Length: 475
Ligand SMILES: Nc1nc2c(ncn2[C@@H]2O[C@H](COP(=O)(O)OP(=O)(O)OP(=O)(O)O)[C@@H](O)[C@H]2O)c(=O)[nH]1
Image (cartoon, rainbow, N blue to C red; front, side, top):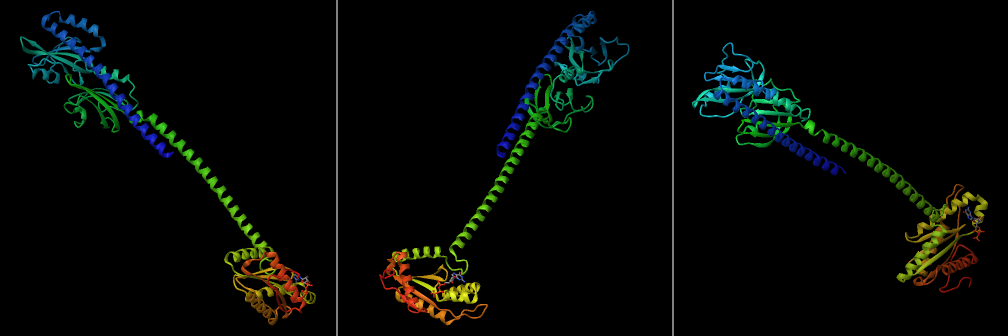
């Protein structure tokens, strides 16, 4: 999800940047057209007036009045400078004292290039007669092919900037009319402008001052406010000016920034929700697994309890019989003998009657311990009930079983059982039956061993009796 959000943000940032470049170029194109037509209009007026200065010098003043009425506020002054730089005519007031303009650039440029008849547009200057900031549109006057002075059309410096000001380029954007001499002709900007117009000159390393750069994009830190700007410029080569539109990311990225914040906040909320869901799932799973583990443990404990005789710790009847079944089928598979012993403690009732039931319990437990000491690890000892026990001997024939049974009988008889009321002498009767190659089923085998036990009891107890091979129970 975050990869998508970050990808989307990158994509939208690129789109916003591209849209701003396009907007800047469209604005620059529109302003170029406006500037070009304004300059053209001024030049037409100049050329018209120049004809009158030369052809109808006497009627010039009236003609100027008519022309200026037609162009109204576009033109703030029309003046004539003679070949020596003296102002000889102004529509504003009669010339009562000499006004020397020979130092003005718009005079010098024509005086120093007497062969060239071209329009010159000055940077804003403070009028010595009008005392207002104005831009001078000038053309040289020739008399008989010789330089005879300069015709000056003064336009309020705000003519362009007032128009630019009406266009919304954002609170931090700017529209600038620059001279190729790097001075500002007109400017409209949200940012404070350095000086009025005066002598301020822009740094020359800007790409739009490079010779031959007619149209292009600009990106960099602005000389206006030291902030990063993106812009577009168009140069009017013949007029010696260029239009520059600067847009600020603070304005054109504002919409994108809001959307970016919204995307990040939404993605964060979704992430937190997913995290919360993941934590809940984790907590539930943990509890579930813990419960499952507890259940498994409880099940194992119950199985253990069901399989074990609580008093003596040997196999319970159920578990012992299941173990015998398993041994018989294993013996069948491997063709091995299995033997079964049935054990019954002699006169156990007397022990209970003499010493009490708890001592009887101690004796039963000690008896199984004695048996276990004689048996191998894989022999199976189980309690069938009361004082009756059974032992399965895997891989053991009748002879081997007789030997084990005899060992148990002797061990029980020869080692009195230590109890809390002193040692108690015990004997055990054992009946046994064998199954060659595990051929017998369990029940008949048990019955044969039980029959042999009966024989042992009948024959006087404390002895081992074996059932004969194939002998049926009770026979
Ligand atoms: N202490 C104790 N006694 C038990 C337990 N289970 C059975 N008994 C007793 O074991 C005795 C078995 O007695 P009988 O079946 O008469 O046999 P016996 O006294 O051993 O005599 P023979 O088997 O004929 O030698 C009974 O008194 C039962 O109460 C037990 O878990 N603990």
